[in-house]
Image 1: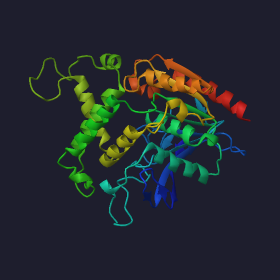
Image 2: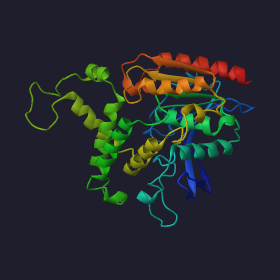
Image 3: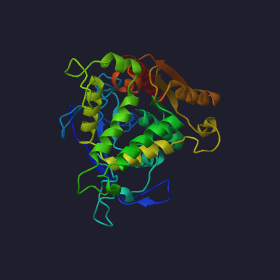
Image 4: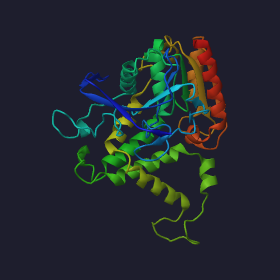
Length: 368
C-alpha cells in the first residue's frame, strides 16, 4: 500500500502559553475508508521521534510506516474495518508547523522564536484536523509513549469525542528521572558549537549534539536484557581492545550509527520543543488528583505496559488504572512480558495485536 501525506492549513491556533500561532499547517496520512456514519475513525498518535507516516509504504521515501506491523488489512488496527488517521505533531519537522517552518512575519524559520508548546496544544491541533474531516466522535485514540500522553489528553480534554482510548507504555506525567534524561539531550544540542542559539538553518546544523542526544535517548528505549542479547561485550571487527577512543564494542558502533542516522531526519530545535512539551505534561495540570482529572472521561480504556520498560515503568500505567477504577470507569489493564524495553510497543506485537483487535471489536459493537 503506497501512501502519501496530506496537509491542511488553519488560520491560527490558540496555545496554552497564551499566545496564538498563525497560520498553522498539519501533515497527516489516512488508511482505510471512513464509513457512511463516520463511526469507525481511529486516531493513532506517534511517539517523540515519529511522524504522520504510521503505515504502508511512503510515496516520498519508499519506507514502511513506524507502526506498519499494527495498521493495515487484517492487522490490529484493521483497515478493512476502520479508518485510521495519523498526523505529525505541532512542533514537529515532518510537514506540521514547527521551529523549522517559515515565520510569515520575518520570512525566516521560526527557530527559537517558535512558541513553547504543550501536549494539550498538539491535541488541540489534532481536534481541529478531525473536525475538518467532519468526524464528531472517534472510535478510539491510541499511541505509545508520547502518543499515549496524547491519547490521555484526548480522553480528558474532549470526553464527548472519544469512545475508547488505548494508551500504551506511557505515563500521566513525567517523573524527575524522565525529565532528567530529556534535559541531558537538550543540553547536548545547545552545547554544540553549531547550535547558534537555534539559528542554524542556513548553516551547518548541530549534528554532533543531536546525535549524542539520540544516543542517550536510545539507551532508555532498550532494556538490560535486550542489550545483553543484542551486543553483550562483543568487539566490533577486532579481537583485542584498541586502547583508544575509537569504537571497540558493538554497542558503541550501534549507538553511533543510530545517532548519525537521526540527524538526517530530525530537526534539533524540534527535539528541544517536543521534549519540553513531554516534560510539561501532567494530566492533573498540577491541581487535584489524577482521579479528579479523569472525572469527565467517558471512554473505555485498554492500558498496556511492558515488563522490561524502565523508561515508562508499569507502575505509572497502574497509577492510571487505579485512578480510572476509582471513578468506576471501564478499564482493562495488561502488563505484557517482553525483553525489548520501552520499544516493545513497536517490535513485540503478537499479544498486543490480539488485545487491541479484541478490544476494538467489542468497542465498535457497543458503539453501534
